Length: 202
Image (cartoon, rainbow, N blue to C red; front, side, top):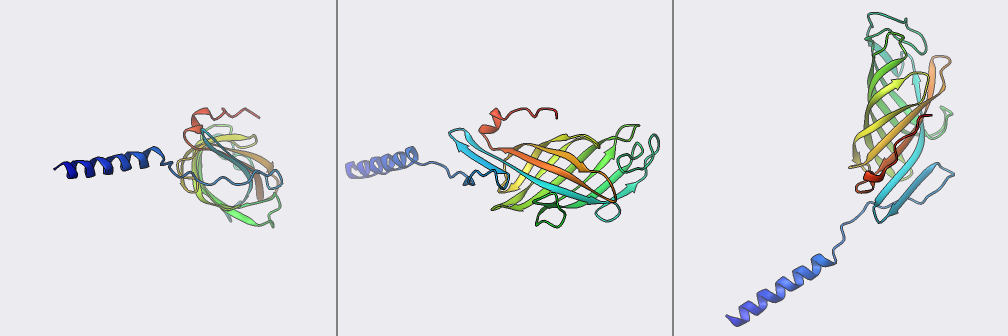
């Protein structure tokens, strides 16, 4: 009986010792570099990641009006009538040039929510395969067609699982059938997400 008790006590102490020194794995951070506009940092509180891609949307090729609006502004390069539902699936490239390497895709929809046709409610899934990162983030928020818009990140998959933060989309070129947006992703993992900065208005 004493030998059994001693054996159980030794096993319990070994188990507790293992728990004391067990550190859960953390996703590897990439090397910080300003050249590719990717920045990643890991500290005692968690990890952050920021990078920039460019969205290219071509009317009636990668983006379509599927429900016509009912009132307000007409259809133009920057406006759609109130109630218009628009869907898109656009390539994301590493530079503003459409011929630069494709690093992902943005797919989603928007509903025009203002009578001047300039504002909408948008949701999107941004799938990325870039600089060693693979996964997606989902965003939901308001869009102002001719100004930068910030979208809260509401979920993630793959390398972006459990990430929070925001995506800033800024129009670069609104002329012609294809429009280009600068897309800046700012991601924060728990518990660092609690200290993430509030995005500033551009």
